[in-house]
Image (cartoon, rainbow, N blue to C red; front, side):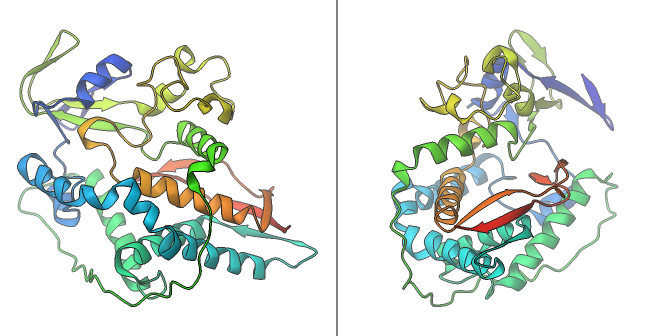
Length: 323
């Protein structure tokens, strides 16, 4: 147990107790109350509660059905990946190799896929919007970690405009993502070692119990997803090793407890965008490896840090080679 300002925090690292919290359907556990500035800057399904959350979630869920996402592969995922590969192949000489920090490119790739899938646009055409979203994310983090004094607020005008441009769908990629089994194993193992969110947070809306323990109203619950991903009891003695084969039979058979893997949250509030993200990552990796091979640069410094999601603090420099 710990304290944040005047609010008690309970740290939970037991899979059964975490399951009770994450699968709650009675409304006992909600997202922790944040600095009101966070709500001002981030008014979306991730922060809403109750009927507002349920309505917004219900409205956007159909857009993330797997079949609809697969239909986006030629017009969005493939074109974005093709443009990335074209840029990288021009950067690397045919007989040589070149060092490149790929972290910014992958951030831009994600933005480009979203722009094409949602608005028939591209990252370059919507660059100003994405830059404003990055600024918004920084402000959200500052507000989240700042101490709030009621009545003392600042406002920053956010000119987030959703535009729609005609897209060029002439480039197609014929990759069956259902057959990329080993690629899926690799990505799941990466998500185990470095999950996007390392700690899942909840808050008791009313007095409740967790595993027979009475918890009063107003307590923050910290669920240590990262700790479970490195738990010897669930993953074995090779828990710190990069071993994609552990996911050969799927997620639920990868560990001794099927609730020991939390890369995209769990329960009613699991991340709707997980299938979107996985398709994007599979397409990018599969298409890049048809043209280039790469190795980690000696200049790489291993320093993961938590922004809104887990990221490489000093970038991701790799050495690219033409195939």
